[in-house]
Amino acid sequence: MPDALRPRRGTAFVTGGRHGIGGATAIHLARAGFDVAVLDITEDEDAVRTMSEVKTAGSSGLFIKGDVADVASHEGWIESIASRLGPITCLINNAGVNVPNRGDMLEATPESFDHVIGVNLRGTFFLTQAAARHMLDTCRAGMRQTIVVISSANAVMVSPEKAVYCLSKSALSMLAQLFAARLGAGGIEVFEIQPGLIKTQMNRAVWETYGTAIAAGASLIRRWGTPDDVAQVATALATGALPFSTGTMVPVGGGLHVHRL
Image (cartoon, rainbow, N blue to C red):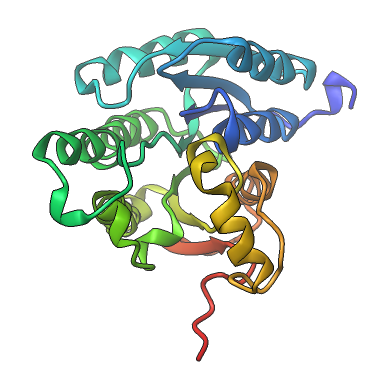
């Protein structure tokens, strides 16, 4: 699309965005007209590839190496993004970690608990808080402002072998609703996406197990979900495809969420 015809939607900030769901979302947002800042704890070939795709889409990009659990750095990241790319109009809370070893929840350790909660919940809460303040301070007439929280089907589906992960994701559902309630009057829309069985590096250890379950009908659409499946929904929400809505959860699981007997 010629640059003059591309919509200008402001700046999107995607956490955990070097690859997988975050990387795909960064690219789709760039194609939709956002300049994109990506935060990730690792800067590697995947990060370079994602930022190259952002540029190819005609958008400006900024990669920040950092850990969302590092709450003290949040304000600095936001200031840097705003000074380089312009005010943040979309936050995609995608960064997350799983339990280091799946196993008996009776053997879970305080150290693993603190790590998972520190990234998935604590870091996400305080980054959203900082971004929300920034959005309220920089709102402009006619510019949509959106926050999307990527949680998991494990927000509502029990997996005892990764209990702490489930706890962190269930709390993100409430986080999204709380911020929706607080920010609605300010015109900021907040959504939650619950991905189902999405084939990413995070769940590589269970590709075979989950693949067998999918083939047997675990999800109504009998295939793995892809990062693009989630990214397209996140981009639709960020661009206003769900008008007059906020605090809404959108499942992206091919029917995994449907309760059956």
